[in-house]
Length: 217
Ligand code: ATP
Image 1 (cartoon, rainbow, N blue to C red):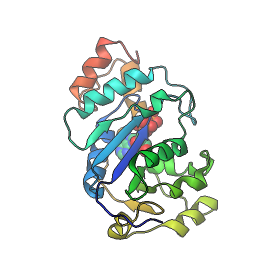
Image 2: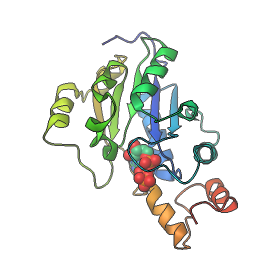
Image 3: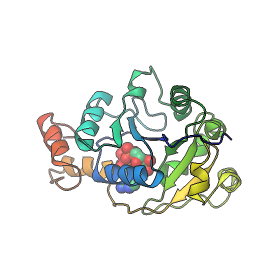
Image 4: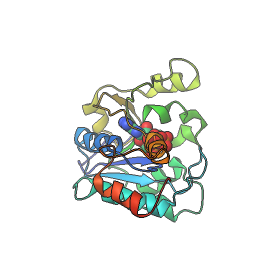
């Protein structure tokens, strides 16, 4: 695993963002600070490989993400996965970003605990650490796997010393304990269907966008 020569590190935070909510923005901002990355790139997936195609188009999910992020300096809404025909595999994304940033720059793929537990079903998942670190903030109600192939793999690559992780460009799995909000996009979609308010679950700019475009009704 390469030793890092600079601190221009990059983090990736993928999701369906259907729609984006305060849980996403808060965790991304906290991760950006913890990892001291130059940019935290938030990538809406165009064609999620592990779930049904969202009814709301990727372009609209990206637009909501841009509204939610606003002027936050380290966070960026990234349309990289919107340019790919199908499906949005993380391994393709980290390979592309790795080519873009060079071999020495630390690259962090941030995945929620709910995503981590399915990691061993992802396309070429064994190759992910050849290109990046994987960083996992915990999520209310979810635990890391304690037995099986994935648990063994995590034990093999886990590093709890963040300073040591940051010195390398790739290769480690790191867990962090951050302040999480018990919010989900499913919850927001359900509330809209039931005609309930979604105020304070996502920024006002996103609430306005959803209402203007009659999304999730
Ligand atoms: P859905 O309810 O449709 O499954 P979601 O709220 O889980 O959506 P996603 O777009 O699927 O949102 O999540 C993208 C990433 O954000 C995932 O890695 C997920 O673990 C993480 N995430 C989602 N909600 C939260 C939250 N409240 N706190 C921390 N991480 C979250």
